[in-house]
Image (spheres, rainbow, N blue to C red):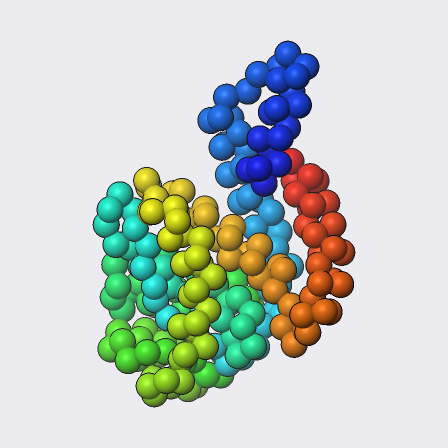
Length: 207
């Protein structure tokens, strides 16, 4: 979005209308957030019941914060949650958010051996959810962090929690929109144009 809006400001400048970079930044934040909310509502009820969950780190003002992330068995996004703390309370809030966002009650959750997850899953989702914390079974989630890290790494951190939260939710939802599991490389290339057209249409409608 941001690059598109910068192009708009250039065209407007040619016509004698000048916009500040701050205006462009605020536009990109608003449009990104609105589109992310649309994508989020569209995928309600469309994920599997076997989840993989893990925590990764982000830098905000030079300090570590915790990004809770979850995907289903085939890699579809469940939810993301940014927290200053890594404890049972934060984990409970995340699992509740996952169920509320997706409208799906999981039958199984795979995590690492974080002690707080045992009680958090029971308190947030109930005793009927199977919890697996066996080593190597969560490699799928570990590898999935790479997409987020490849974006946040070059940025060298965020200046405040609000910007970090907007980025995480927007990036993850857009990434999920273009995610095409069980497709060959050729099929993805063929489908990308139509996906991008749909994405652009939603973005301009929001703007």
